[in-house]
Length: 303
Ligand code: AMP
Image 1 (cartoon, rainbow, N blue to C red):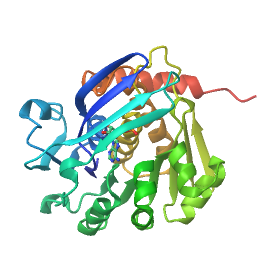
Image 2 (cartoon, helix red, strand yellow):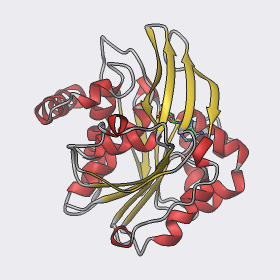
Image 3 (tube, rainbow, N blue to C red):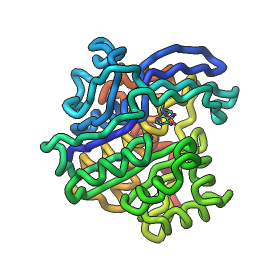
Image 4 (cartoon, helix red, strand yellow):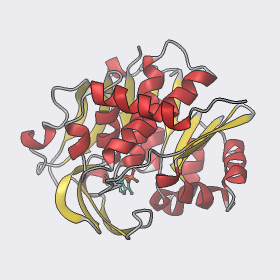
């Protein structure tokens, strides 16, 4: 079992969906990722928060396998983001993004984190992602996520990140924007030419498409009766996916496929309640049971 180093946003989110609204709850890409991945292995979190982030807020990380020694507390306000969803929950509008303390953040990877074998660059300014890559020593596995926000504002910096990682995990809209291709099969091919040897495309309620070696693997999303808030589902997927890979002895094609199901399993919980609520009360036995449900969902006997 290997630990994972992650850098990305830790945030206060405000979220409005057709099913309710919450204000100033703990979110951020690295938060969802760390909580999800910590069900599988040890996570080392590198991020920054402001002095409005209290011990009470950091309680979401405590009692889990999350090492906070790379979390910087600085004067100022924590990153804030607000999103609003349409009825189908697939379309989201960003109301605001306030980078706040991330504006002047310089990630400093503690010496005992620098040889972490698995590295996940969660969604944040690509320059910060590059600064992390500059400080780690020969990781076995590197993956990156991003958002349209960064693809549009910092395309060159993000291209430099892509050239240096082996896996990219992004959603369908971002894959289309990044590649300039409407078709996701073509988009995956174009993105692989930019550097990463694997592309994992998250398609919300339509599941996941992974392009690797000379093949694809596609998984549906679990059909759910209750879906209240998709915020962080992508980061939660990444946490389950990379957490599973890091907990396996080696990364083989079979393990990659199992990891897609582990990621999809974690994401299915995340959407059932607002913010981190569902992940925070989740148990290992619930994860195992739902992984089994997934297996039944996609298994069939060939003639
Ligand atoms: P997701 O729903 O998986 O796309 O991720 C939502 C999370 O990303 C929220 O918790 C936000 O705080 C965070 N987020 C939103 N915009 C950005 C951004 N531009 N950079 C970093 N994190 C962001």
